[in-house]
Length: 582
Image 1 (cartoon, rainbow, N blue to C red):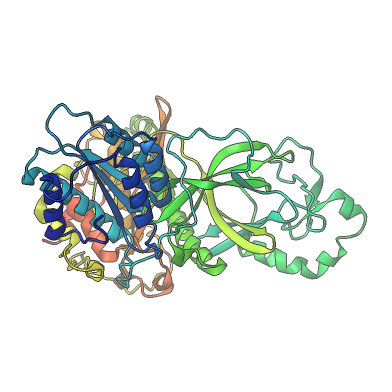
Image 2: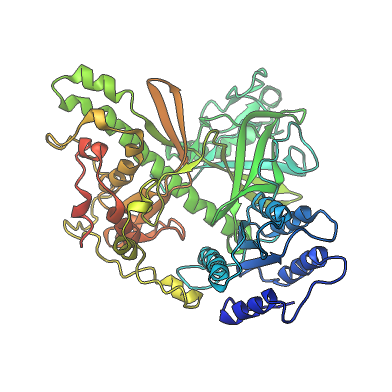
């Protein structure tokens, strides 16, 4: 066993020695089972959960021992997910059967591990290429797990178990779910976000404020209405029984406060489907660099799944999961980001919808514009629940149905265009990163201060968005050449200008949905907002958007790779070259 070996040439030489059979020869019934058991034991020795893990598995052919090796590696991958890089290497001349290794890799991938199978030629260069690939994968994991602001490693949560990718959805409530529909496990409050006041806002509770009976005042189900909202504040519900018995008189003392809160937008009426009985699955089915995702469902009074399929999102890291306040802070940045992105998308759709007014043949242009895709972001909510007296919160939103795609990212990548980005452009967008340095060296993703600083405003205008209407660039567009993929890249560009160069929405990901030949839309989630720190000096200065916000460097990275398209020109956006200085 080679234990706690760094990824260096020393390890490489030891592996070469094994390949030459100078120190170790196979013997006994087989080594697959003891090797996997030893690997699991070694991986679990990392109690801190703050480092990336790798596992290399060498074999010269079909195992001589018997066992369900795929299941063993699946259990390991279910524990560590994308934190684990797993490489199987078949070291033999042609003709050997490596189907077992291939099956092990497939199983590891099904639980989110970064896994690959290689069958190198029996020479040093071929093996070296595989080791290099593994090192690259580890570097990616290390970057994900490093706090770029402090340079410190972040601890990944180890209290979770992953389900196999492709596991069918449950059709009914089982012991694999946590239900919030009893006196000990229940939902206390639902929160939305109001970007204008930059804070959470409470959704009006449809349960009786006295006895907690569901009144159905918002008619979210076909059940009969069993109560009404307070006639004065319209922010509290009461059932008919409590109203008739006079148990609601206490509310007179607080009614004015609720009325004021509703006027200020701190209490709002729900606009989407929801119920107060809910359930979240214990295992996670998705994992990103920042978040883990569970399945989430609404429950009827009999405990059956009803309504749309939902997902629940939490932080992947302990630092954001330790207590109620830290969890809410994590949700604050997500909700703020998604709400501002949604508002910018509405303005983008409106700007396109009004563009026909700038053309002499208005009706013809309007007919074409009505067929272009719109952009929308999901509207998440935060569920505040109580379990045996302990408060717990989790962010929920609808599950996206369709082919999930990433259209650009926060490092300047554009879908379908990455191969066209030159090395010089890439180095500009990334800055001077030395991957050989220790993790604290990853905090300096920069050297980029080139984002345009002209027309610097003093941020005296408290309105976040520019009120100027969009108008086409004179004779520089061709509507017939507009493609669907142009809209999302143009939207990122538009977000920078409509926010007066304060913000930019990137990392656009989601699904493209087509209802019919003349109606289609992009439904997106999990965006990133870059904030220009020098242009945000008043109330926006304290707005944070999480560790994926790269500020001016992220904006520069976008403009380095962005090529203005027909939609940019149609909206009259400034050319990208004006922002990205050479």
